[in-house]
Image (tube, rainbow, N blue to C red; front, side, top):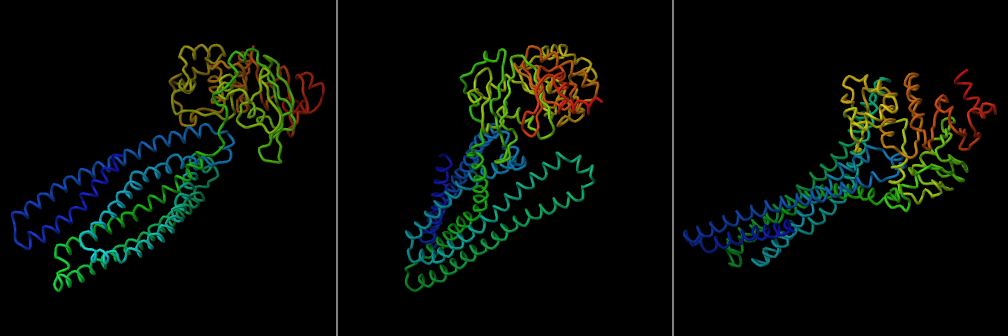
Length: 556
């Protein structure tokens, strides 16, 4: 509101100035009245000071409003993004999402700080100037506005072409962000395969497309601005020509009115040109806002995040049942086919199978990263759909094959944003026998880990992830290929730890290495989304089927 009021007062004061100058010419300058002319000059100077003040208020308030809006918008967008199901991140490029959150939000900010409010001020000033023109001299006003329809037509054509050009600009910004992000993350592979030159050429081409799209906007702008200046100059010339003739022959026009109209035309066409200047900001902002609001309105959000009728005490002696579960990531391509199995309280169940058999999909469904296609999952006889995501993930600890690390100390990576004391960490390390693992780091718990876990081996990363999950003391424990990248010594270390933490806990272990799961209460063998074998290690060896074949391949 403050910005709008400041814009109104600024427009009123600036429009008053030509009227004062007209009055000064007609009453004091031509009559050589120096004393009263000085009074008019003082009044004009005071008005200029107030104009500067209101302009300052307008600029400050409009930018403050813009930052306030985008602060809330960016927070809402990030809150939306972190609530998305995993399937969103599987099908959308991370660089594109980053563009929405940063570049597109900044473009929206410009709409408020340099776009809408400025255009409102310019339009108000244009209306005020036209009103004053007709008040001073309607004949000169009509001449001044002779080219206004042509200017409006040129503005409409300009806006139409600029919109398409700015769509291309935003599209290529998104592509560049995606390209840079992916190549920085995968720079080791680029260098391993000696593809630096090839990737650089790809980037140059992408950069050229962005340049060409941006040059289009410059071209349209370079055509439009001279058109505005030409119309302004012609209108001014007609005013001087017609006004001079009338002033000499008919006295229907005064010298002061001619001077006032010269100032009015400058003031009229400057806002019109300013409105055109804002079109590039508005177009970029509209395109960016459209992309942001598509993301905000998307229906990929996880449901039932906090609300739940199921309380923490239901997690004691947890049982898990998959009942006739069928799931497909893509329609018509099922990954699980009518899966049915039960995990009894405090049982340790293992799931094995070839790549793509559906092992990880079972975990994805249990953790509610994806919605079930058909069937039901029950935890202690409570349907999974009735358990909130927060409640579920607070009580099921999971160690994944791929882990995320902070560029921070070892201790902070172990705690990982949780309210855990150092003493609790020390006790956990002792309980699962990882003292030697921690002590081998130069600064022990203060050892600084690089971005994305640089400086750690794959086995060390998994051990830290194992430890951070154990510290949360979950009721259920899931290991998803968590020992796949470990050397024999580290694997032996974690096998011992697994026995400790799975004791008196319902646990699921997904593994290719059968040494990790031989003590499981039950082993499920998956193939092409079906459970083809089920039993203990000894039972499955005696069965001499798929499991036995896996076992003999690894150990014989």
